Image (cartoon, rainbow, N blue to C red):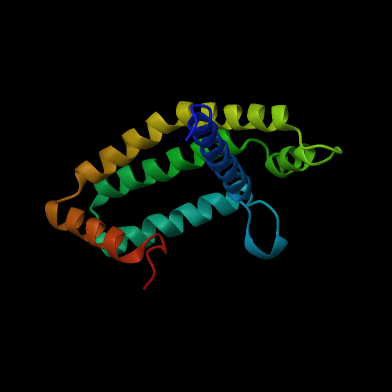
Length: 158
């Protein structure tokens, strides 16, 4: 392979990954079937349901539930920071295709803004996750690891 080809592949993969993440984040907060973004009240209700479901599965004590709720609140704040205003992600992506040619500079700017937002918003999420996980007893941690190995991201269904 020539010398220029490897960096080109690497940059293309990074750009494709970043665009995929951006498009995925644009979809976050939207309910299925075109019902639009979730309201703040719906986010709070969904968060409470998630905390209750996980809390019952792991048999969390009051302190552990507080840590889990703090994690949920931090995730909601990160989502708002990364995704921006409801519907803005879709408008930004549509604008990239609005002209006769794809707006490459606009796409790169969008990816850089979203990447920067993720980098800024991630440390509090990671800290909240670490605080929650570290507050779990060894048996509870084992349940989390088992869930992660088994479910592959399908949620705490039962």
